[in-house]
Amino acid sequence: PAITRDRLRVAIQKSGRLADPARDLLASCGLTWRESRDKLFCYGESLPVDLLLVRDDDIPGLIADGVCDLGIVGRNVVVEYDLGRQAGGAPGALEEWRQLGWGTCRLDIAINDDERWAGAEQLAGKRIATSYPHTLGRWLSERGVEADIVTLSGSVEIAPRLGQADLICDLVSTGGTLAANNLKPVETLLHSEAVIAGPTHPLEDGRADIADMLLRRMDGALRLKE
Ligand code: PRT
Ligand code: ZN
Image 1 (tube, rainbow, N blue to C red):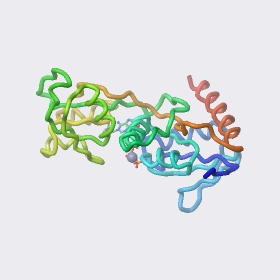
Image 2 (cartoon, helix red, strand yellow; image 1 turned 90 degrees about the vertical axis):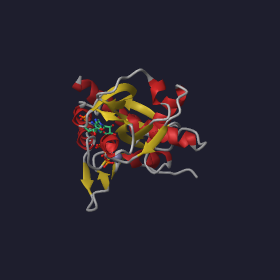
Image 3 (cartoon, rainbow, N blue to C red; image 1 turned 30 degrees about the vertical axis):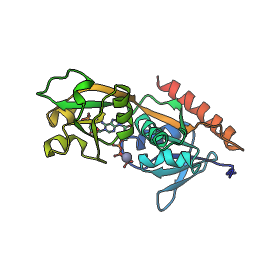
């Protein structure tokens, strides 16, 4: 069913690493908004653009379901979501409409720092803890390696010490957390940054023009920062 709306709805992270930069970017596009009491929905005052403040993991699904039109979210979350859909036989639903250049990190394989790394083949039969089972699964299958993926929603870095896994696949920025857990990165599966995620199809009704205007302003704001 076609959803008709004359206002654009943008999903951003409610709190966390991407929350403040996302708000700053929208503010630099001239958007002002009123926060509702539940702080979930923000009505845009200066432009017909409303915000939904959610957990980052919920952003891809909100766009895929047409509840939101665009989202500001890490590529890692977008890729994992679309690979999960494809694993279930559905087509991918999301595209990167813009790359924002911040929120950068890598999705890395990390092993105990006293172990030698000889390549992906050595992962055969190993237990790998991760919050990114689909992204890891694709990487392993591209290399013909069969390993046991242990999906954890958090605290992935301590899984080897707890005996839950032999090694991990997790996000890394400075590498400090890996080092503190006696782990070292050995392979990078994905280079990530914050992106504007949108549907694979163009927006309909008045939302297409609003999105064009917002993205033009964003491009200007991003260029000014360079
Ligand atoms: O509550 P909600 O679900 O919305 O938030 P969240 O806890 O899932 O996400 P959040 O706020 O931690 O991260 C949001 C996004 O920021 C991620 O999806 C990435 O796109 C991006 N990002 C950038 C990172 C990091 N850098 C990062 N370092 N996300 C997580 N980390 C973790 C890393 O895994 C490690 O555990 O931060 C820790 C510190 O990293 P080091 O390498 O600097 O020690
Ligand atoms: Zn999250």
